[in-house]
Length: 285
Image (cartoon, rainbow, N blue to C red; front, top):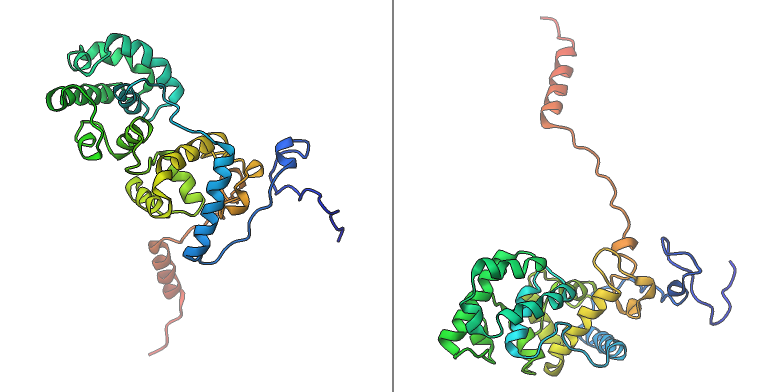
């Protein structure tokens, strides 16, 4: 076997891009499969994950453009099943027409829907925006409250939206924002086994320092968009690959499932047995 010179890059995993790709040249090696990980070992691994994400994203906040708690609330509601880029393009025209909760509460529904069509699911979102605006006017004097209990009472607002507003505008770490990126990366990194966002949030809250609940989620979101995407994760260019139990095993790296052998129908087996019995010679009397 030819020995690799000291300091040479490891060979690219099967299915990687051509060796000339600069991302592949710096590819980390795939981690060995772990057995059951102890709490202490997972804590040490998470400490290193956090340190590397901080090095990559020193200062993070939401990518949604906003100047007030109301604007961030509106943008976060619109961001469901949409992109931050699309929402940021829609927001100026929307806020020019409805700058306050009172304006939004009195908006013509059809006109509001037309304004937010690019974000998708515009009818449901228009209903949520107007419902939230009316609730703010009736119960909070038109101001966005700074508490989880009050925010989740607004129509169309769950823990994820409330956590975005509390963490990114009010600077409060009441929970962890769990969107599709945070949920996906948390499972791939072995920080949770759950798919339910609230259960994922509880797992992350138990693992992370309170002061990092908001910033850690933002870092995972950016990393999920840039490196660890759902369908095409760049494990060959990932600085977390040696810490990730899913590295080189998901997306483009996943081995195709073996086709299952077709099961014989119960009726076919019964017919086969009947045919065998019919051909069996009978004994004489």
